Amino acid sequence: MTSTTAVRTLDGTLDLPLVGLGTYGLRGEAGYRSLRSALDAGYRLLDSATMYENEDEVGRAVADANLPDVRITTKLHHQHAGREDEFLERSLRLLRVDVLDLWLVHWPPDGVASPQVWERLVAARASGRVRAIGVSNYSLEQIDELTAATGVTPAVNQVKWGPALFDGEFAAGLRERGVVLEGYSPFKATDLQAAPLREAADQHGVSPEQVVVRWHVQHGFVAIPKSGDPARQASNRDVEGFELTPEQVAAIDALGRAA
Image (cartoon, rainbow, N blue to C red; front, side, top):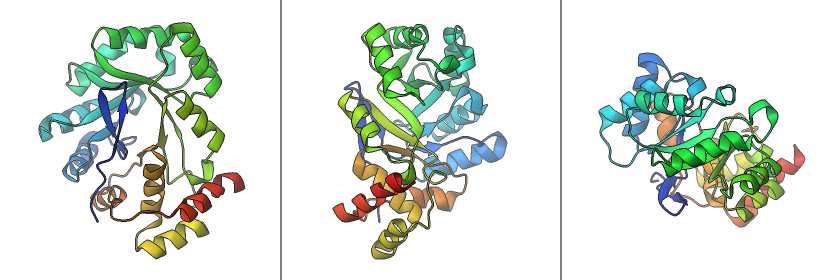
């Protein structure tokens, strides 16, 4: 099999790979080595956040790898509302970049949409310091509130996602709004021994984890599984050599309704 190179394009300009690496917990020298192994394995999207406390490791790994096409995401902690510019400058410094590819609001501040925070992200994009902006863990209603207040819709909504959490109405709602669904913790969110996953894995000669990632790709969702193990990193993005049938996709979708 060959590793996935499929992308989603944000704001008509930024190509975002459909399979990236979640970096939560990848800190220190061990984290740096894991990040380098992921880049060596072909990952071109690394997902970080201020609260992960590893932006320095991510930035160092990308700088040392010296690759031209790596996309970096980081997230503004919801508790830092009102200090957006300060933390953007901090992230840029730690990540060793002049322009951040994708900046997200990590959680709705105080549980509400907070258009005033979103306005600062819109301003950061307008200033050229960020290429694309989005949110994480937002509802459709909260996204609509941001759009109504600013005229700018988030390019991405990053949520905990996987077959067991599949919600067709939510996914369709994001798609109708032009928002890319990006899924974190895809393996933790699903029973990897569920029959539709095992049966598809057996038929295609792959692992259930690869089936989960392939399911994301075929739906057009961005998957960001996390692993520090080089073999698992390579396996998780090695999903272009097989295709799930429509029947298999439907059976996997149904895991969400059964949960």
